[in-house]
Image 1 (cartoon, rainbow, N blue to C red):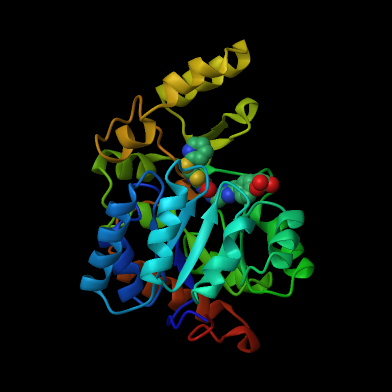
Image 2 (cartoon, rainbow, N blue to C red; image 1 turned 135 degrees about the horizontal axis):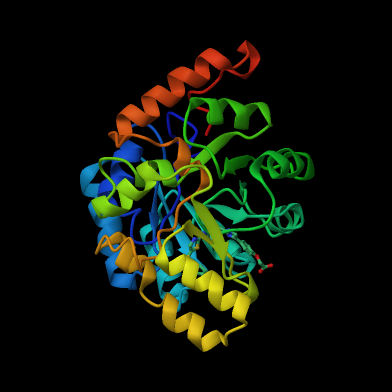
Length: 309
Ligand code: TUI
């Protein structure tokens, strides 16, 4: 479907999934995905051009549907005809038809079975079933519960995301019926990720209980590493503070984490699998090792790892 060697997608992380990381994932046989969240449309166009300078392999773009620039970002993607688009944090139904007309495959990220069904009816080419283990904006259902139910509910390909960071996770996802995996946190903690080393080191230091979800009361639950910022957020929630106070606290939080390495007041969006990540490695090593491990674990009839997507 995408012409990639391996069924391993890069989560389209705002500020992190930029050209060096995207091109590295695609060059290593996965599918790099640009995170357009927070990007002005002209920067998105430059990012697409830069990935094309770095690799001739396919790649995609994530559209974060809450972005105020979403309409202009969509026009860039349509004009540039990238291989595929993933969407997050909302319902992409209004955009699916135009994307498909341009020959672009559409894979909405969904946190629930009902949404997967709705996306299939709206013409999506596949869905990314993302469990609550993920970093960033999350749903309530775990990957191991969500993926097989989505697989049963739709007949389009399903990609598993949330809590996957090695070959065991890839093999497990395939056993659950997924066609591949999407990973964010593991690639955030890679050599090529353009994130501040303090952010990467915070992931290495984290254990499996080092994240928490805040923002449920605002209707936008977000999983981050525990720090001064997220504890403050949790306190505001318990105190029932007004929306404006949350927004004042949150503004610029992801930028502070990614660019400034501010591990105190930055929003360190990362998944629960941070606890398993203990080394910063090049993307190619991550992908090659994952595929080798999964190939050993999978039963023969599920072994087709190359050319699945
Ligand atoms: O989108 C993500 N992860 C993200 S987006 C993000 S930026 C952000 N920052 C603060 C608040 C909100 C967003 C950081 N991380 N993952 C994909 C994802 N999509 N997870 C959950 C959903 C989702 C949620 C509701 C998809 C569809 C949906 O539909 C609701 C409806 O019915 O419209």
